[in-house]
Every structure is written in structure tokens, then in C-alpha cells.
Amino acid sequence: MSTQRLYTNDPGETVWAVPASGNARFSWEYDGGRERLLALYQKGKDKQWDGAKRIDWGIEVDPYDPLGTPDEALPLHGTRHWAKLTEQDRGELRRHYSAWNFSQFLHGEQGAMVCAARIVESVPDLDAKFYSATQTMDEARHAEIFGRFLHEKIGMLYPINDSLQGLLGDTLRDSRWDMPYLGMQVLIEGLALAAFGMIRDTTNKPLPKQILAYVMQDEARHVAFGRMALRDYYKQLSDAELREREEFVIEGCYLMRDRLRGVEVLENFGISRRESEELSERSEFLALFRKLLFSRIVPCVKDIGLWGERLQKAYLDMGVFEMGNSNLDLLMSQDEEIAEALDRERFAAEEELRVAEVAEAVAEGADT
Image (cartoon, rainbow, N blue to C red):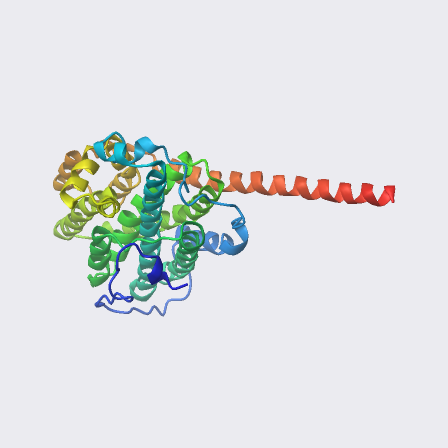
């Protein structure tokens, strides 16, 4: 089935063409490289996996409650609009919000794939090209998985959010080789990681938990890659060059904050855009969600050396300044551990079932 038939709104042209600028860079230095980055590259090779095999796609999903999200988290809950909804309508609303969230994850992962490929092309160092090549494969796998979940389990997609599309366009149109790192690895992926984590840790549905845990295991490496590369490079930049990048981060963070409202969903339920925005802004859950979402971005920005006065003021304005003290390494190691623990739990249970089936077959044979 064509994806076009599953979109809630017309996404426009099926191909979005972003004019590219900047140089493709080749390196003739094939010996050595940064030890930390080459170790990350080796880990990227070792940790490749097949989404068709590692994830149990046979798990049934209720499209009208795909994530088990409490109704209190929905912006309409407790409003006059909520009171008018039938139980069937409320199920449809859950379906739309899940489709909207996972659609933005899908579009973001395709953007990450394109940005990783752009890094392969433009970054001057061969060790960074090597790692970016493994990340490109990771992002392709993530886009495949999110696309399959939306097609097979929810049966609905939303077009890319304007704010996400704007930041992706700004990132890809910039000719400076470090901007795909900054726009994608730090901002878009940092925010996505926090969103993935909130759903992973609160959903009671096994399939989305598997998908998000395994994707986050990869993304932990990607953010580490961006931090290494940018921390080294930004030490060499002038104050003026650092301020330019801080302005990009400020604008990008406001765009990412605004993309979380999901007003497109409420508009599809007949609520005006203005009221949809007001309802979203009044949501206590969204306020908490926003704050937690920056737990991955703010410490990363601080770590790579972008911490000027204007940037700190912007984070104070957003109410996320204190997130700069979050332990990013601990968060990333926890992402790895959760995925590995989920594997152990799943495959141990499958092995027990297999052993029981074999024992049963042997017993039946003995009786015969």
C-alpha cells in the first residue's frame, strides 16, 4: 500500500529537495586516527543488528491504544472537548497522537540518515568518515523500523512537522561541515533520545518498548560521536565563530520546543489552530515533557564548549538551564544496559519455552 494513502493530511510533494552547498572532502591519510573515535567505529560495526529479526513483529498492537499512554497526558483531557468524545473517539485520539509521535520519529530518522551521509561526504577526517558510515546504516534501520510500525500496527502517518522540517533544512543547507553534527547529533537526536526514553520507560506495550530500547542503544553511540568530534573542533574556533553556532543552537532549541505541541492532531479533531496551541500550552504534562526532553541537549551543548551568555539566558527562558548539570554519560550507559537487559529477558524466556517444547516432545515419544 502506498504511504500516501495513510497520511492524515496531504504531505505535498513526495520528494523534498534541499539544495546542498559545501565541499566534499577526501582524506589521503589512511593510517591512524583518534583512538576514541576508532574505538567507537569498532563498536558501531560490532553492534549492527537486523530489525526484521531482533524485534518480535508478531506481537499484536491495539491501534487505538498503541502505547498505553494515560489519558491525562492528552491535551484534551479534562476540557469541554474531552467530555463530548465517545469512547470510540478517545481511542481514535490515542491512535492519532501515537501516529503523530512515531511519524515525527520516522521523519527525524530519515533526516539523521541524510545528515550522517552528509558528514561522510564533508568531514575532513577519515576516522569520522568511518564512523559516520556505520551511523548512516543505523539510521536507515531506524527509519525502516518506525515506518514498519506505522504501516503495519497503526495504519496512519502524519506529515513532517514544520519546526522539524525547518531545522532539518537549515542544517542541510549550511555549507560548514560541522553543522550536520550540531543540528542532527546534538539537537534533533538529543531531543529524540529524551522522547524515546520517556515512552520506553512509561509504555506497558512490549513492541514499542523493544523498538525504542534498541534504537536508543544505537543513538547513545551517535551522540557520543557528535560530542567527540565537536569538542575537539570547537576548541580551535574563535569567539565569533562559537557565537554563530550558539545562535544556531538557540534558534534550533526554540524550534524543537515548539514542535512538541502536536497541534496538527487537535486540528484534525475540528479544533482551531489557535485553540489547539492554547490547549497544548496549558498542558501540565507537556510542560514536564518539554523540560525532561532537554535533559539530553543542554549537557551536550555545554560539554562541547557552547555555553555563552546568550545561550545560557535562552535556557533560563525555557526553564531548562539546570539540565546542564545532567550526567550525560550515565544516561547513555543506562540506554545500553536497558537494551541488553531486554534482550536477556526476551531470549531467556524463548529458550525456556524451546526447552519445554523439546521436553514435551521427548515425553510424548516415550509414551508412544
